[in-house]
Structure formats: structure tokens, C-alpha cells
View 1 (cartoon, one colour):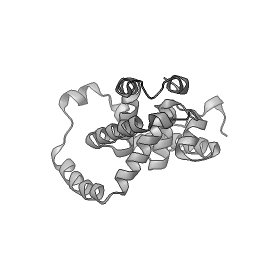
View 2 (view 1 turned 180 degrees about the vertical axis):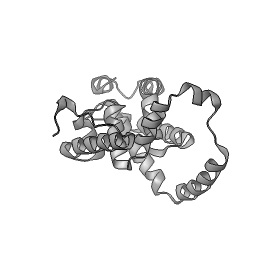
View 3 (view 1 turned 90 degrees about the horizontal axis):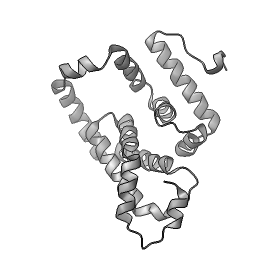
View 4 (view 1 turned 180 degrees about the horizontal axis):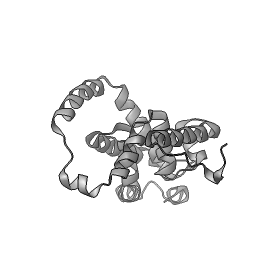
Length: 187
């Protein structure tokens, strides 16, 4: 689904069908991105739902300057930012952290199916500072280009490349492995 598809539509087309298509195509990406930003399933679900509501209401204002996926991830990022700024979120965050540390333990099945190395890598990614984590996930997991990430985060492409490099180096240090540089050279 792209700009041309939406441009060809007129106001009379069923927007509910368009919303269904958006959710089927990009729902998992939006939820995963929201989860990476928040680290909580419930909050990721709220942000993903609100993202699609906002996209539904603004679909005809989409101008095609970026891909549909990048546009939705931008909405998700801004929605998450609004959650983080709210006083409600700060109060719930404190209560949730106390509850989470006292109640949640990974199930035996989950421990069995998820290998130690995958957990170590994931923990290393989640322990990165937010700016590095967000940039790396947009690049490595969501497969956005440097240019798309720069537009989404409102940064220069050079800053995006630098953050990706620093994130990879930090993960390599945390895992005690030599950093793998593209092309075999250090920039």
C-alpha cells in the first residue's frame, strides 16, 4: 500500500476497509515498535491502537513524502512520546515497576524455547539508551533506510548512521564479542 493507492481513492471509499488493510499490513510492525519504545505489552497495545485511530482520521492528509510504514511508525513514536510526557503515565509507571518485579517470572516453556544467546542479545538491545535502541531497531528490525529513519526521528542521515554504529558497538561490548563492521573496515 503506498501513496499512489491512497491518492487514487476519493472520500467516498470505505475508510474502514482501508483501516483493516493498514492494520493487517503494518499492525505487527507498529506494535513491535511501540513495545520496543515502552517495553510493556499493555502500553504497546494502547499505543498501537491509538496509532491506527490517528492514521484513520488523517489518512487523506498522507502526502507520500515517506513510505506508509514510516508514516505509521512516526505516528506511533509521537503517540508514545505523548504517553511518556503525561502525568498519568508517570504514576502508572511507578506502580507497574513495583508490581512487575514482585509478580512476573518467565514461564518454564518460554525459558526452554528461547535460547540463552537470543535473550542476551535482546537484553543488550533493550539496555541501550533510548536514542540508540530506537535507531537500531528501526534499521535492523523494521528495515527502514537511513533516510527514512532520519525523517522519522527528525535527524540528519549522518546522525542516524552514527547512532547505528554506536549501538552495534555497545551491544558487542556488552556481549564481549568483537564488533562486526560492514565491509570489514572501521569507519
